[in-house]
Image 1 (cartoon, helix red, strand yellow):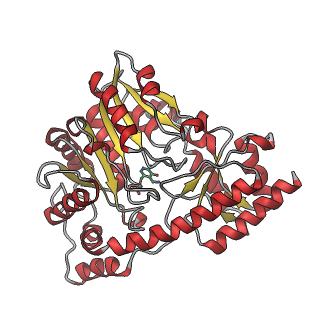
Image 2 (tube, rainbow, N blue to C red):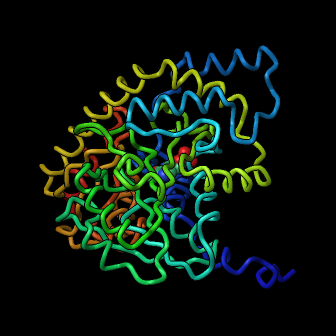
Amino acid sequence: MDYESRLNKTILEVKPSGIRRFFDIVSDMEDVISLSIGEPDFRTPWHVSRAAIESLEKGRTWYTPNRGFEKLRVEIADFVKRKYELNYAPKTEILVTVGGSEALDLAMRCLLNPGDEVLIHQPSFVCYEPLTLMTGAVPKIIDTKKENSFRLTSQELEAAITDKTKLLILSYPNNPTGAVMRKADLEALAEVIIKHDLLVISDEIYSELTYSGKHVSMGAIEGMRERTVVINGFSKAFAMTGWRLGYAMGPATIIEMMTKLHQYGIMSAPTVAQYAAIEALKNGDKDIEKMRGEYEMRRRYVVGEFNAMGLTCFEPFGAFYSFPCIKSTGLTSEEFCTKLLESKRVAIVPGNAFGESGEGFVRVSYSYSLKHLREAISRIREFLQEL
Ligand code: PMP
């Protein structure tokens, strides 16, 4: 059958994720040491899993309200208030979703019409551009620069705005660069955003993984609450990627629209995961601290090693990625990663998987044990010596 002519044209044209492509090659090879995946290597804290098991033992296996358990939304509201000074009403301004991923998809589909322009800074996470295209809106890429520590500047933002611009996707702490935005950086952006009356989706999934001061949320910047949807979740902070739970917070009207879509497409996020999440938010602060401490140690080690090898590495203050520059080797990002994989069996991700401005860099995840990292680093060092 001729499927192509029958399939959705937009989806046909969307390229598969560059991270996945590399990951698929790796999964077919033996003896590969991978630093390619953005996933905590920790297990979900046991008390969190236990709360989920108890909910199953008690037979709590039904749908929850579309927006998620109210008890969970109350815990989310308390958590983001005490951590980031955000104020959201559990009943109307918070929606529990299937990972931050679903929240991003819903927010874009609710905010965008065909022809709207969406500003996406790159290098950044791989889903923003395809999700924009799926709505018929038009992605406009802003390349952030290493000289600015991969922060989006207000000048770069202003220069990209046209009369069709509707939305900015902001993604800090950043995957893949590890860049973070300080309060002053966000305030400078806010001035431009308000002047041009834009909306913002702020993906803050790595908010608990910052290594220099506290995370500042775009939703807490003066004048931004009414025009921002903040996305967050449990995957990274609590090592809960497989539970598939996230949330969106924003103005009641937008959250209501998103709930409508969620109601038809998803019904409600997994019940067992919601019980786990309540426990995580209530009693998980120590777990976050412990994991962050461990990541911090690995971060220092990895960044130090790259700089010592001559692969200059900008200091990443958030998430769990380093983004060393490989331009000095004369190889492209793809060549570097492919040769490294073939000759030393180390898998890392080419920077251009996160946008053209990632060319000349590679993403190295340090969400792996120190033992694993040491082995990988020593193979990368050998690789450079043999080049
Ligand atoms: N945003 C960013 C920046 C990410 O890196 C990820 C996962 N890698 C997500 C969102 C999605 O996370 P999840 O759906 O597991 O909450």
